[in-house]
Amino acid sequence: MLVYSLAYISNNTEVLNTGNIQFKFNGYKTFVTPGCRPEDLRDDKELAYKIYSWTYSEGHCSDKLGLVRNIFTLNTLNEGLNLSLSTWHTIQSNYEIYLKDNVGQYLELKGKLLELISDFSKRTLDATDGFISSFQSSAAAFITFIVSVVAINGLKDAGTETIFSTEYFMISVFISIASALWLVFSRRDTKDRIDYLTSQTKSSILENYKNILSPEELNASIDPAVQSVKTHTKKRIKKYTTLWLLSLAAFLIVFSVGLSITKNEERKSQTPYRIKRKSVLSHSLKRKSLAKV
Image (cartoon, rainbow, N blue to C red; front, side, top):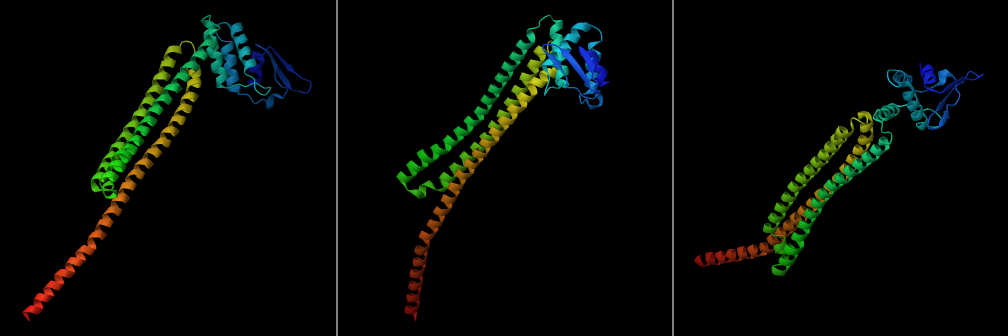
């Protein structure tokens, strides 16, 4: 099947004295396959037969044959044929353009696809930058609270006891909760925007170019770019989510430890006073008891 399919597609088939077989294709360039025994051919026989059947089916057989030979000669790899589904999709797309009498449109459309995919990548990265901006705003809120409210007002008015008071601790908890909620909202909103951009871009390209390029070739151009962008944005979101959570944890730990230390110092400072007062009361009661006696 493979040998006869290639023989009917090629311009010339030669069987050498050694028993090896060669196929010659004259397309955009001339290409001759390396000589090998028929049983050593490793090309996809089902795909070769599919191309052969399509070439000699209804329509302009000679034009189809010329088109197939052009694609074959442009698609070679390591001095051998490179038959794959991509070859079949390219043949179909080029034939659709040929039928519409617009030979230069294929390259133009491929360039337009690259522009659309580049624009999609930029818009997706902008969506991710919005999430990063939210993280920066949250970090700025922590710094503002610590510097302007706690450090300046606390140290100026009443020292470290005020900084790590219960009131300031409750404010820090409130800020942390608000920041955590904003993290969840920003993360979900960013993912929704990326999913929407992906869906909208892909459906728009398929709808606008489905009558010119085959859906398979369109998907082959779009899907790798979409997957690459998704992988990159996912890593960025994960990285900044981790930084955000670490900032929240550090913020709460600082105020929790500070409040605990402050409370312990207050209890220690009050203990001698209680002991002294208890001692005075005990001595007074003892004197009264002796007086009665």
